[in-house]
Image 1 (cartoon, rainbow, N blue to C red):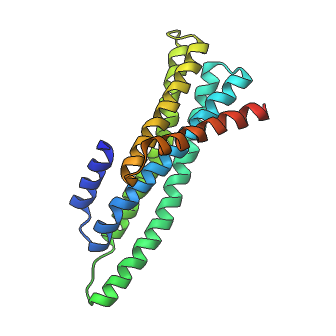
Image 2 (cartoon, one colour):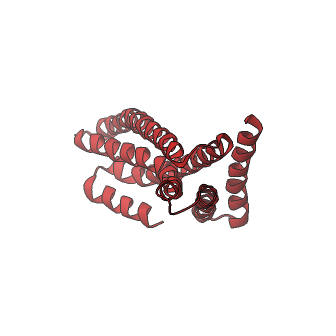
Image 3 (spheres, rainbow, N blue to C red):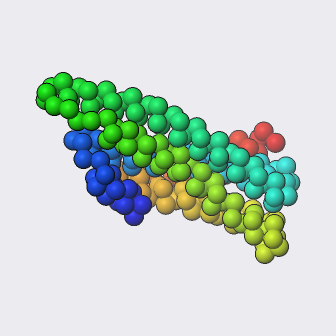
Length: 195
């Protein structure tokens, strides 16, 4: 995926500590995959709930933005606290064994980069799924077409994520895609049953 490659290059250029340079690309890839997946499932939940409650497009936008913002704050703080602690511990171990001082700036920067990626990757699918509702709010789409387009966008994101995960795992595309798409279908079913 183009974005992951760019992030990987950024990390290697800015953070030259052996521990952070070797660990971060794998962690970044996992964070992006997990959070895009979570964000897409959240987007499906927002769309289905809005449809079941017959919310106007502006209310769907507000709800989606609030969920996206909440997940971004949670993702940033959670990742920063956890990754900073983990990376600091690993750097301390390396310093102890190699009798060198690596520095805390790289650990802070690595934690910050991971936190920002974590914070941005969950709300991204939510915001993308809200675009049809923005268009509906301004009269470019009907509400019905906004729901259909948002569903298509969310399930397309799941499809692409399934392909990407299969590529990472060198696994069966159909298997990964079916698993990812079925989780989206489960979210739809749960929302329908609860409403």
